[in-house]
Amino acid sequence: MAGPHRPIQIIPSVLPADWAAMGQCVKDLENAGVDRIQFDVMDGNFVPNLTFGPELIKACRRYCSVPFETQLMVSQYNCETMLEDYVEATKGANGEPGVVIAHVEANTHLHRVLGRIRQLGGSPSVAMNPHTPMEMVKNVLDMVDHVLVMTVNPGFGGQAYIPTMLDKISELRTAIIERNLDVDIEVDGGIKANWTISQCCAAGANCFIAGSGMFAYPTLKEGCDDLRRVATEAQAGTVLPTPN
Image (cartoon, rainbow, N blue to C red; front, side):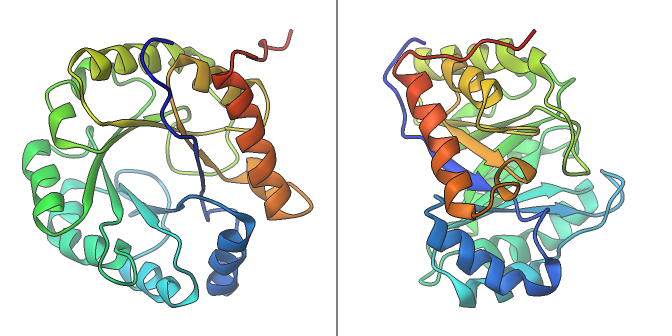
């Protein structure tokens, strides 16, 4: 991988959590040593599922101080009419910018949405579905802090990782380095402490969203530590092969 290594970040998705005890869940995740916590916002329109609104995200802030990240898997109408609410709910306890991710496929006016996130005090980021080519985000790379490469089709947790996304990650990493941009690459979907996180890290990603791949462990700390270990080893050159 060309260029300097960027810090590895382990970011659990709360989709597999006990939704009736979400405050305790985010507190437990903080104690496990995670870098951020992701809320998958789904509106039943852009994706065929319903999850969290800004009020739930905001309520969780009282239980932990770890940074939040909100992925807006929602229609353009939902994104534009509720954007301020999502940005505010995602901020830190003292108003620190939270990561707010807009999907390239859902937003006809992507520049406007990303610029608005920054204007409202958030950290703008952009996500791509598996079928979306890297070229769809190259003209907004200078506006974002993160690019999220989906390695499953969004909408549900527990899906199988799609391995053909590695070239997209590598292309993104090359473009970011060539333009000397300060941008992280995230991956989300079927990520586990095995060849999936290892190969994504080797391709140039440094932020890893894990749902069932972290919650499956006896303790959340074990899951977080294992994911970080495999990614760290990959940055050091020990990359796990694809299983036969």
